[in-house]
Image (cartoon, rainbow over all chains, first blue to last red; front, top):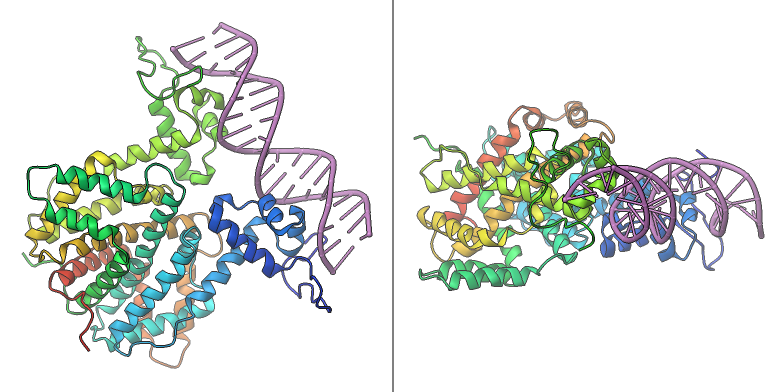
Length: 240
Length: 240
DNA sequence: ACCTGAACACCGTTCAAGT
DNA sequence: ACCTGAACACCGTTCAAGT
């Protein structure tokens, strides 16, 4: 593949402690920083080169082009999804909630990258173990065997989706198109307050959205309610 | 704003039934088609012009540039979110499920547009009425007043998020990077089947993912379980 | 009023050249 | 081995020009 190698074998392996020149790791870190501040579509080989103080073409020797840079960034962050913090709950449902919260935290740390991260399939080697782990948790939580297949998919998609939706709106507002989220919600609240009816509940709903930690509470409560609900059969359609 | 007008007043208003030249509506329709086939990042003024059989610069007379084209497409689709089909359930929870299904259907009709559509705030004039409607449904469903603020946010984010996550993976696989979704799942299933343990449940979970309508069932059951779960207080943390 | 086409500053990538 | 810089085919947009 061309003069350089760009994928495989050892990078530089500089012997001395001096300034080590460009490295793959430095490129990935810089790329993530650019994505954080300019979005994925703002990641540009020229901009990346500039932020590294290097000719943009220098990157091509270490990584096979822009797509490979993005892949490397995604791979680095995907690895963090598996790094769960230490004190984990023993109750299976609470453990699933904790795992969901961890996924959400990782996704929201870099909202501009979240859509790509959430849409990539799991790395193949980890997939079977993860499916087995999920099934064992559902079983331990008391799910009946026939509910488990549907529940695995529902829980995974709702959990990732919640974080994704949050990241998308955060990214949208970070771009500062139109009024801020706060201004919007305040405006809606003002419109409601001007009505003749009693709108205290509506206003409370909006106040909740604006409060700190509101999304955390919504995620935790919603996920837990879905888990318990599915477990005791509340997902089934009503028998009219 | 420049020679043309590009935003406001009447478009052409051709008097005769003949070929009417370029129109705003034709541009929006063509743009949506390009987005469907090439993704949002594949929407190009040159490509759009070509698909309309017109010089790319001709579009600038009707719309104020690429961002305005995208805005118009999003606005058109956002309007469809409010167009609910006729036979609606009377039970409040089932009505909320039906509304969620409708949102999901609209988002998935154009998966490449879904992230943008789901991240835009509601059009301001509709927002107060929608909040009021949501609160009234939750109340009718038997939610207690103090649960309603959290529930509105949780339901909206989980519902939109589920569809968004589906759209993101669909878009990812449509780009045909790496193996197909089916191939991946089959490979995981094969790895599980090769184990010594009993992995029938895991394999059933994977078979479920591959089955037709699996995502429909997951969305419907998961949303319903969350609604009923939140209603009866299953979202609250356990009192250890 | 509506459309065209040259021009400009960007973008990713190739490729020959430097050290 | 590692980096540079010119070059090419793209992109969005401006602007003068056509009809």
